[in-house]
Length: 232
Image (cartoon, rainbow, N blue to C red; front, top):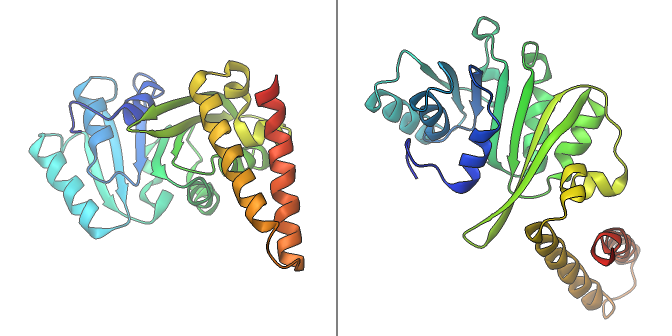
């Protein structure tokens, strides 16, 4: 992967960035995504935010090597604090982290979203945290994608401002993905249910403490919930 050829998951994220957007890529790592989008003439300006010094320095070097200093500003900052009011950022991308961490970044940086119209997230795990955050904070899901790369399955969730209400199943699996029911979607949830069943079976041999009882109850409810999707 480089600034010209992205991984499949980052290419999918890039596809949801609208023409002419002013982008803030949070956790930008090597700044591959903003560099790619500028090279493709899809955007003119971007902020690449990174909280870890090593990846920050890597992003600075990549931007300089690509001759994009006038288009991409790299900032060492925690989460959405990389965004300044004068940037007039309208699109935020956050990719390659766990869903709960992405939700925390969005929650802690809510005041930085004043000019943002679109948030594109690519959680590695627990995408439900982002859907829950969206519903509770005045954002709605406008698109989703699921894809498989190198044996791993990734979800992409695109948010825009607006009121939304999702039921437990939609929070868990995604309202758009639920409608599409792709082969990759079914593979993911079949895997998950099999793992939950394995864990539940192992817990049957454990001492019946309150903690174990609650865990068994939680797993049983998850299996029943997702089972509705797989049996349709």
